Length: 369
Image 1 (cartoon, rainbow, N blue to C red):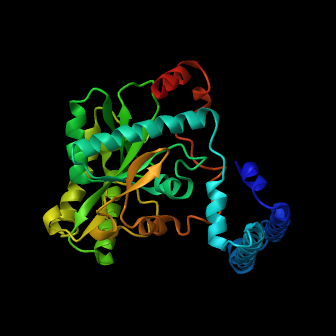
Image 2: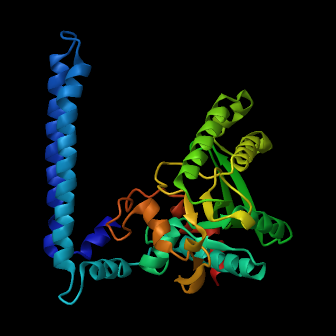
Image 3: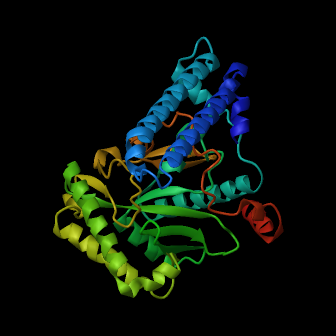
């Protein structure tokens, strides 16, 4: 994907390869510094920590600052040359991302399958008065690409807790779909997914939960994070959850032993006045069920920034987005028109090669026919 993107840049911008040469030279210099410190301290001076703190760390910080500055300079020159005379830099960035080619092969087949599931999910929610909105990478894709990000293979939605309960009740009586819940010990989250009942179809929608909040004051969000940290500590010290260490991605018969920690934390949040019922709400809060990876800069949002949701085009269908999508995206990603860092490193949720042929390929093609 990186090589494809480079083809869209002007020839002189492809000199970004020079940046890699600079990085290699800086890495060689850093390795040389490490070696000199180790030689100087190989059992003689016994003060390697002191030398590292006082010699290496300032040099490393300086290298990092130089790399950041070099990166910004190169991007400035590249965008300036890429833009057309009548365009602004922002318009050029929007054109660049819009013109990126779609995914191909198994990845594109998976995306189209998820797109069909999204369309059906949207219809199911409309028929049953359930509110939802596209979120995170799916929201970026809708705004920036009018569909999936070319290298993305998952689908993210936001939903209020009371609407999720309503959805679960409906799906129980609908044999086309199912909702799975798995407990991820690596990030201590409760992962909720909407899927087809057919296990041969690997498409899924991740549902991120939000609660109603009586205030949009950030101090309530900080209290929510503290409660979640306390919950994680209790989970880690609970001997009854030893099985979770052996199976970190768990959806077995002992679910209730994990779930009780989420239930207890939720009750603490209610008792502390951090979350509320809909009638007394002024905002929405990122739920304790979700992961906290430090990237979610904002945990509470005014209701008016979410509702009423708006229609947005996505892979040829109409889905719902937040009333103020920029706020939701900026709080996690910053500028979505910056060149992304995860082109080659985006986590692969489904084995794309298995979709190239065999039973999965045939099942997906039948789904899309």
